[in-house]
Image (cartoon, rainbow, N blue to C red; front, side, top):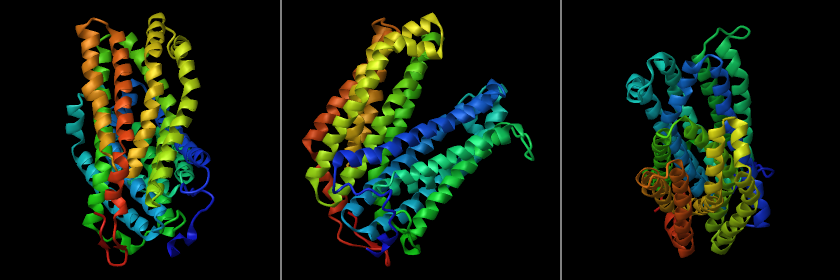
Length: 476
């Protein structure tokens, strides 16, 4: 237990004892704030680049589609770190948690480097594949290449975030996110427009600001991991490659990554269906999606908090408390989401008007909110259940439910209702309702079946020994 001597007790939360509800909320609120900070990050780039014209604004818009592929991989494997570290923390085995941290750092750094180099080399081909407009091609080329250079550092931050969350520290990553967002907010106008001693760099300035601020976040995170101020201390022996640990990380993380990736591709496909009905429908859909994303922020926070709670309690061998955590998180998300969705239901037209004061868009927005908001409420429960699956290490349901929601349910239903049955935009809104409700029902049945409890023991709890000094492991 020597490695735990530098434990930051103020931010680390032990989910195996004390009030389940209180500790879930303590874990969840920094995650919620981090998501809001990330939204500010993206808005800052869009705001300042918009001052240069639509061509400049195209650069981050197109790059985001490519970025999310890497984001999905990094987030999924980082989630595997949360799972393993939380269960080892619950089991009182910090040395094994440190070993996982070291291996996750090697793995994600390597994958990030491959993504970055490959993307940098093939940027022209990627832009042509994405049918980048000719008047925006050069700006997007310059912007995207810089973003690719920062990929390895982006992946490294997910190592810190995944490990910290598993240890019960969501305040630390939030603090680092806050620093990163603040630096980006300052650097964006300075580098884009050339304020003070800096030359005017346009879109390249925005890209450099993004890469630098993310690099700063990664360096702070890694410094904390190697200094032991984060609850575990990664040492040189933890960085010795271990195939068995790699395999375990991939087994848990890849389903999450694939689920996120296919979801992103599914939403891109849905945009094509929406666009086919004209700009008014696209505008209403855009407003609705932004509001739905904001509504899901509490669910994201409680989902991640529940993943940590489930992982730590399974690691401690307390299955009943892991189940209690999930049930408590379900109750909390219901109480939090209910007033939010009621506002969206009754004031959907006013929300749409606040964004776009157009009669057609307002009416479409009213209809969209009336049809979809109850399913937003329902889907919040599934997000909490996915946190349970992730925390147990049994991530197959996460992938299956994410893929099914878009590709097996929503997209076919949208085609059937909007086109074949002639319902138009309302058919799209109903496909959103149907897909959200259907997968939540399946997820609830999967949860009640209890497979996650037995699968969890196969993932982590049957470990025999893990010796950081020699690299000998038995994680299977």
